[in-house]
Length: 313
Image (tube, rainbow, N blue to C red; front, top):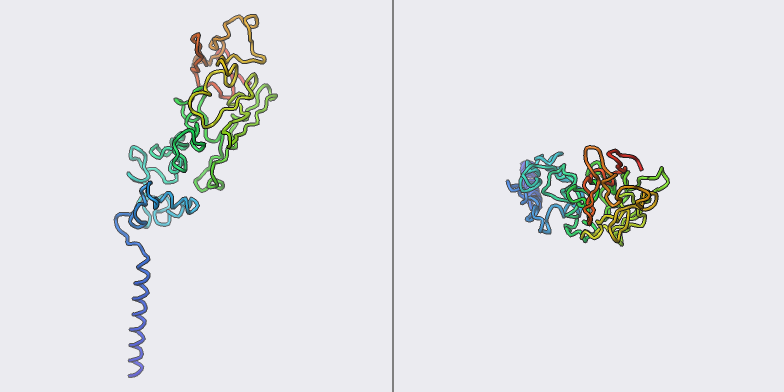
């Protein structure tokens, strides 16, 4: 009889401990609701909030993979049964879903489609900066978007940066700013049969781009041209900056290029007399006052166009 009473007392005591323990544990658990953000607290999807999930991920070393634990390997639901890819969250301006791992999630134009490569670059920057005067924004778009390009074909991100294959690739998440390494072929392009060898570099303090093929380090070019990355007021775009006279804007190169009527019978100011690409017309035209690049796709592309054909430098 005493044993039975003792057993009953022990059972009651054990159940009491379990109930108390579960009650304490439940205090620390979020209450799952149909409104996903409540699980994380208010402001989780509000970019202006201190509790915005982008800031939380950044504080966690950009560990976006942690989101997969609840939202699934593709962020489309998972055990939380809440997809990150829907209107109001990770979707483009047209409402089309896109992965949270899209490049323009953290930098660039968030409302653009995930595969729009030009939108991967700032603005906006990681710190939400949008002004070209800020180094992290600079003239990214003037290099990447054809309609904004002043004088040449658009370039790819890999020309200046190491582009990660995946969001979690080694070296992607590091200290800002992003390294400028000129890993593409254009900035370092050798000309004059290999005699002119660019050594491109970027000075973070001054914002100057130095010794690159793209800005004049080529045969008959202006080797000393050092455009400033975060100046987007048009003062650096005149013809003559990369070859010719940067003061007057006359693009007529020096060096071995014909320089006077006795050297060449045609009017030398009219670039289109010689420089054109078959099917695309003249590289540049002159109206008696101003030179204008007409065929950007075949200008600053690693070759030179002459009489409707392209040749290596």
